[in-house]
Length: 487
Image 1 (cartoon, one colour):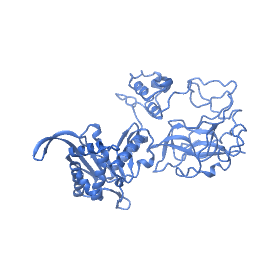
Image 2 (image 1 turned 30 degrees about the horizontal axis):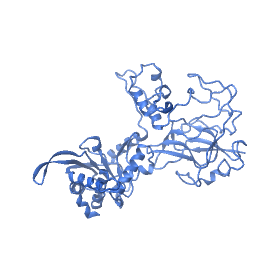
Image 3 (image 1 turned 90 degrees about the vertical axis):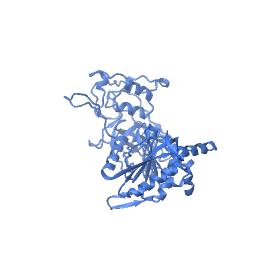
Image 4 (image 1 turned 45 degrees about the horizontal axis):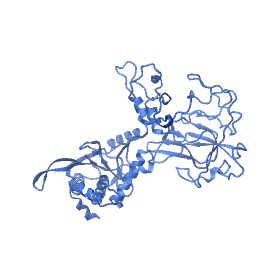
């Protein structure tokens, strides 16, 4: 006899307490293997696929796409044990791949408490026979609340759960003939959207994707379609578009002079807000800056790239300068343990760099940057930047940094006073490199000038150390040959 097991949202690590469902990878009735990814979720750190430690037939899913669930809330229920139907699994299916009782025992440790021990099997789906005369749900009609399985459903239904804030009601559960199949009005057909970023953009702005006509192949809705719709004139109050705004996006309270859009601080934006606020509360920071002549650095980079081989980025050269300066001033490669009232000085440099993506500001980390040359740093920056733009950064890619390099010059600005990336102790900011009048070898000349700024935790060092670090960075920018001492 099959046993119904409940799989809850696991601890995704790094102190994360909640995640938002971006995309379901399985349907009710699907046959899943041990450690097969069943849902894609977005945390404050990254998008990750969550594998299920049980093999069997999916009997229920909990939460719709866009729902935010706390760690420990139910995700799906799976019937494991004897196959639910002779047609679902053939006699040649090995144990653990089609729902045997021992399927869950082979799970290893990919996420915290879950993982893999064998390659996942190909997913197959149990296709229930459609009810003879199941009426369609009309938009606006009250949904039925029954969750009884249909006669054609071969998987046992999940046991009912007591309602709680941590356990949302299951969705997409098989129902009897004549009953509604979902708690919300069913659309006329599947929405032609592939990208979860497009769905998220539409959801956060209260845009109904069913009202759009996609410009992509076969009517696929692209990001440009959503952005064009958002730039269109706002619909009158009382229209369908105005009524489709989600509960999380509301206008100003009645009686105010002007309406305003309220955007929840959650996900990446919320994590950034929390970290910056904590940095301002806990770290007594100070900032010093200096202008430097970067003409020779730009010439050195051009000569490196002209010599052939992989291209070297300007960010990689600045990173190499940072690691050399941190070797001379290790006080800035540290963190403060407030509970123990101790300064923790690191013997490695995990270099973070600020990157702007569609999901917001992220700070990927290059591990052991002090052991890499300019080519190796260029490759790592390119890999992590591409992963950030594609939403593939893992929590491990975004944590553990000991020092941050922030090149805000790409935004066309000269200077800034960066906020330290808590719990680090310092951040180097680099402005744009532009031609300016400069006294060079006693004569006025036009040179490539850049402003460098260092924000540091005044608890780990005094101004003399911070000034010495920044001066060494500026000297290396002005005379890259200084780096030869550290090679």
